[in-house]
Image (tube, rainbow, N blue to C red; front, top):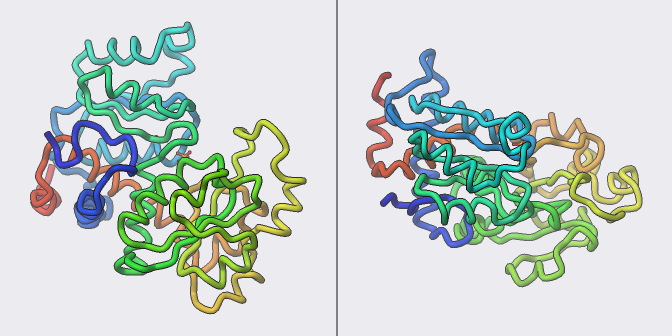
Length: 318
Ligand code: CP
C-alpha cells in the first residue's frame, strides 16, 4: 500500500506529513519537464485511464503529460462518444475498463462523491480530478506547491480565497491543505457565494476585497462558476467586478507584494482584471507548470514508490 493509501479523493484527511511528502516529491520532478527529452521510465508498464465527465483543459492535459513523462500508457475516455452517452453507469464503465487490465483511473465528474463511489467499487487506484463542489485535490496541492515556492513555509502565512467559494471544489481542497500546513486562511466574497457554515472550517471571513488585500500574503482568486448557479447570486457581472474584482488599483493599495493565484479558467474583467492576471504578482501560469509535477508525484506515490526514490527517478533516463 502506498503512503497515500489506495486512492486520492481529497485533501481532507491527509496529514501534514502526507501533504509535505507529495510537495517534496513534486519539487524535484519539475526538472523533468525542463529537459529536451521529458521522460523517465518510472511508471513503465502501468496503464492509466483519464475519465472526464466534465470539460477540462488544464487538469486533463496536465495528467496526460504527467503520465506520459513517467512512461505510463494512457487512454483518454471522452464520455460524450463513449457508451456513457447510451446510459452505461459509471461503475459499469470502470469495470469494463478494468477488464482490459488497467492500473489507475483519473476521474472528473459533476457529482460530488463520484470518485469515492468508484474507488470503493474497483481495484484500480482512483484519483479525483474534481468532483462537483466537493474537492479538487491535485489543484489544491499544486496551489500549495506554488505558494510554498514563493512564501517558504506556509506556517502562519495568510492566504485569502476570494470569490465564488460556494461552488468551488478548489476552495475546499485549498482550505484543508492550507490549514494542515499551518497557514491562516480567510475567504472573501458576497455572502450569497459563501457556504452558510464556512466559519466551521476555521476560516476568517471578509466581506470586502479591500480588507482581504490589507490582511493577506497571497490571494487565490476563484472563477465565478456561472454554469453551476441555479439562481441569481449576484446582480450582474459588472457589479461583481466593481465590488469584488481584483483590479490593479486595488492591488496597488496593498501594504506588501501579494502573490496572486487563480486556478483557471479565468473570467477576465469579472473576478480578476487582465493587468493583474498578466501582471508581476501573478503566478497563474506557474501554477499550471507545477500541476504537471504534482500529478507526477501523486501517480508516483500511489503506484507504491517510496518518496526517497523520487530523486533517483528524476536522474534516470528513459
Ligand atoms: N483548474 C482547473 O481545474 O482547470 P480545468 O477545468 O481546465 O481542468
